[in-house]
Image 1: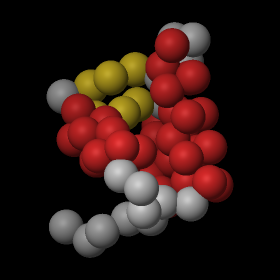
Image 2: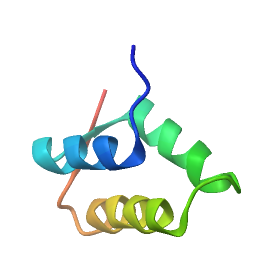
Image 3: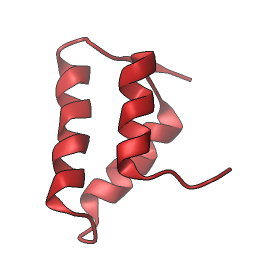
Image 4: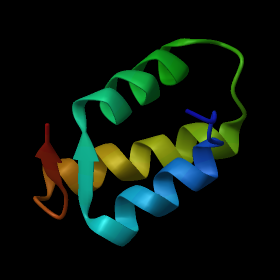
Length: 60
């Protein structure tokens, strides 16, 4: 499996309106690390905002 950039991952999630548990785990690990840009943090926050608003569905 190829490693995706945060931008690619976020685009895929919003295009499908679905986030897998694996995607969620990767994003959580990235967000908790100190090696991502402010833009990547903003994109990850958009995912969690959409989850909280019910605009995305978590799938297995």
